[in-house]
Amino acid sequence: MKKYKLLVALILLIALIGKSVISLGVTQADVDAEKKKADQLKTEAEQKKKELTNIKSDKAVATTDLNTINGQIESLQSDINALSEKLDELNSEIKTKEKEIKVKEKEYKEKEEILKKRLVALYKKGSTSYLDVLFSSANYVDMLSSYDVVEKIAESDNKLMEEIQKVKESLENNKKELENKKADVEKAKKQKDEKNSQLKVAKNQKQTEVNKLSDKEKATQTEIDNKQKAIQQAEQSMASIFKKLQAQIAAQRAAEEARKRSASSRSGGSSSRGSSSGVAGLNFDGTFQWPTATKIVTSRMKYRWGRMHKGIDIGVSYQPIYAAASGIAYNAYNPGGYGTYVMLFHGNGYVTLYGHLSTSKVADGQTVSKGQVIAISGNSGGSTGPHLHFEIRKAESASDFFSKSPLDPLQYLPGGYTLNE
Image (cartoon, rainbow, N blue to C red):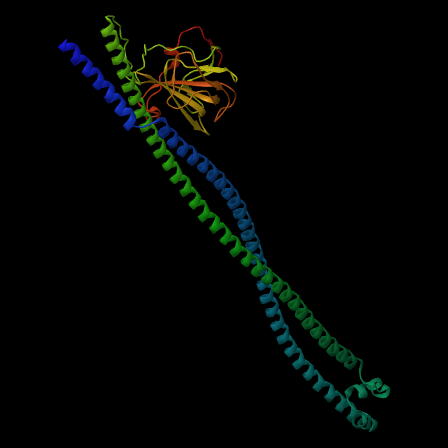
């Protein structure tokens, strides 16, 4: 009788401990809150990634524009340098022509003196009428225009006067030509200089735009990095809470089993106890069933596409997905990888993952039975076509799962499958 009372007291104590753990510990709401936080952060991170993509695109366009402007400036500067060289050449030619003009002016004066001497000689040899013509004429041109005087000048003297006039006209024309060329070159250079100044202003504006986009790119990348860290922290917190919840469920089940044994002892009956898995009190015998009705393997666990394929792909399209073994469910989403996926914790450290789903049919922390529908297959995440990605690993939590080495599912699943790679 004394032993019976002690047993009852022990059972009641276990039950009370189990209830206190549950009441004072974590709840599914805590898991959901952390998951909601992580999902919100993932949504924000994805939005920031889109912003970053747009910023990089705008920066690429602005950089291309800047390179184009730099090319135009280089081309213009080359033209300006060529025009400057041309101006230097023209200035040199003008100076040369001015020197030649001075030489010709000196020569002109010398020939003018020769002409005067010839006229004096003509006067001395001729009649006094020549002297009268000389002093009565207003200038040399009048004098030379006089028919009587021209008639008396030797043919060589006429040629000399014509040569002087031609030299003067040629020099004046050459100088004028050079000055016109210089004016044209100066005008062209001025236009090029103005265009170059405009391009330099545009370059500075575009460079400012590129710098701002670079700063914005860095700031956005920092935001993304911070959100990724926050996501990791939220997922770790969620995994920790989830693990505590599993322990609480295990404690509750242990208390329930103790109460059942107590009731059986009082009624004189007996009960047998199955082997515990250690995860939420689940019974796990170490065997798995196929997660799909169709058993067509389209890709085995192997090295492919430059990396390790860490599970098997099963050729199903929007079909029911079944729990490969009894376990506790955990939902997650990875936009660039598994997409929508479910993880089941079975006990003895075994965890299965079901990836690229269209819809999950289970809640976080829900206990599911072997063969129970847990999801519908799909094409989410980084999938290239509808299929189920199935993995098996040994891990203690969701965050711990991806650091563990994958196990080949075909070594654990029953045979009877078709390989169609």
